[in-house]
Each structure stands twice: as C-alpha cells, then as structure tokens.
Image 1 (cartoon, rainbow, N blue to C red):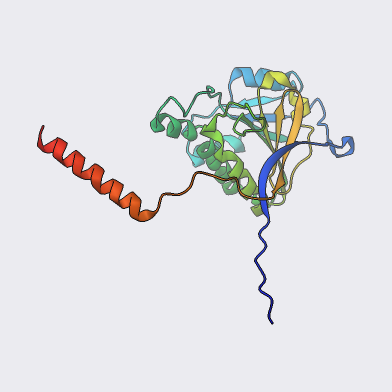
Image 2: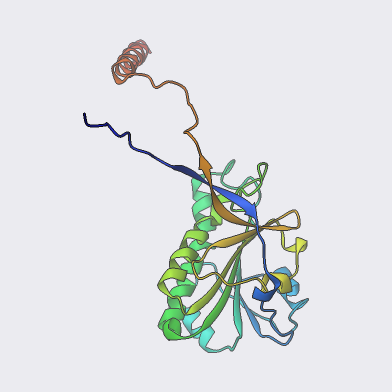
Length: 246
C-alpha cells in the first residue's frame, strides 16, 4: 500500500530583532573625512559637521536632472556620500492624498534613483564607493511605531543596488530621529553586501530576520462566490431603483 504524503509548508514572517554589532566590524571614519551630503538641509549638515567638520552639502533641486547631478558631483571631492531622506510628518500618506505622497517620492526614491544614474554615468560603476542612506521611520520595527511610508521604497532600491554593484559599500539606516544619535555612530556601522538595513529605535539597533509561524492566522470565513454575486445583484438593483426614482 502506497503511503500518501502530505506536503509540508514552512511559514515564516519578517521580524525585527535587536542587532549584535561587533566592535571589530566597525570602521570609524577619521574626523577629517570629507562627507558629501547629497541634497540635504542646513540642519542635517550641522548634524554631520558635529562629527565631521569638513563635510559639505551638495544642494540639488528635488527634480534635478541626472545630467545636472553628474556635473555637480564632478566638481567636488569626497570620501563618503551621505543621503538623508527629507522630513515627513508622521501622518503623511494617511490623512493626505496620493498626490502629496507621489510628490514626496520625487524627493525620495526617485531622487536617489537619479543620483545612482548620475554616479554610473560619471564612471563610478567600476570604482570603489562608500554611501550611507538614512530614512526616517519607514519600517514598523516596534509594535507602536508610527510609519512614514513616503520613502519606504528606498529600502528596495538599495537592496537591488547592493546586489548589482558589489564593489560599492552601502549602508541603509532607518532611524526614529537624527537627534537620537550622532553622525559618527551612523557612519561607523558595518557595510552590508546585500543591502539589508539597520533600524534605530529607543537607543537600540535592530536588524530584520525571519520568525517561524506554525500556522497561518485564522481570519473570518470567506463568503462563497455565488453568495457574493447575489449580494452584488441585490445592491445593484436597489441602486438602480433609487436612481430611477430620483
């Protein structure tokens, strides 16, 4: 008699765990390092200069073209690049409409994409490059985190970039605020070859992992398709009668 084998399906869900960051993997840049802040503001530049006084700000319009960015990069010198996402209110994307969310993405993931293209066109594709990218609360790390979704797409872009250009050192950080840590701490964290990010919450660093789920969470029973169709027909007829009588 042939035994019938039931398929085994392991279920995993992404979780954020406290990160163990070995001191030996930290590479603290010299205080004289030239950090080039890409399209930031004065407050962000002051934050960087508290740790690295020689840092400079490359001012770029939100929709600056690839050619303009390439030209500006060619006119300066740097040891490391730094991009910090623009401030977004905690309720952005929830109370406001899609048009504002798209406009914010012009200053986020689309701006980073244009910077990448400018770097490639300027000959950095085969060169060593160090680049730190910082976003603000785009990930739900702790249960009660308020999420700012506008720049969440940056994480996926950095992940793809790390795999396509392994000669680049990339560091993706998601923080609750710049005031909660220093630029030196951010720029001393390990690079990640896969483009995986670290998140900073309440004074601790977290990294994403997978947790085993013994079973899928139970939801409400599904309504049969035939019953749903009947409901749609009744609602449609009621609306038609209401419209005809108006």
